[in-house]
Length: 95
Ligand SMILES: C[C@H](O)[C@H](O)[C@H]1CNC2=NC(N)=NC(=O)C2=N1
Image (cartoon, rainbow, N blue to C red):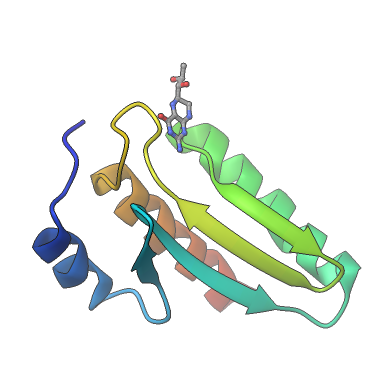
């Protein structure tokens, strides 16, 4: 999968509210009511990642979750990351 250039990423991010390009990754932070809610959403996301065979770099501290997406094999952001970010937004909208 081809790395997207900065313009292509910025264009894609127009449809992904709150996601930003930083250090060759796209990232967004979320806050939940408590750990249980955060981990429940993470579990949901994890199953979708398995389906897409594409996985996040993420950090959870109690009720906060920071997700960073890049395609390790490509060394940057690809369409796979954009697709996974959209999936994550859909999950958050349901939560
Ligand atoms: C073997 C397997 O398909 C690869 O290691 C996949 C798994 N998930 C992945 N996830 C991410 N974010 N980047 C990858 O390059 C990647 N590669």
